Length: 76
Image (cartoon, rainbow, N blue to C red; front, side):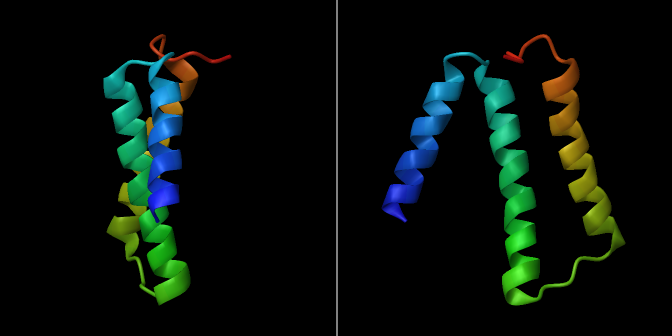
């Protein structure tokens, strides 16, 4: 777990060199929510109802909008 946290913060620090902290944190938080929900569903069999799935879809859509249309990110 320590190695995982160290790597994730290292990659986040690299990302902060080319993107603003607000955008990086929004993406970090959004992807964390989506991945934890997916792990809960796949490993623990937790069911997600329609509102939960719709919210997760909106989070993913927001991340895509930032990456595809925002001038604050580097699309290199």
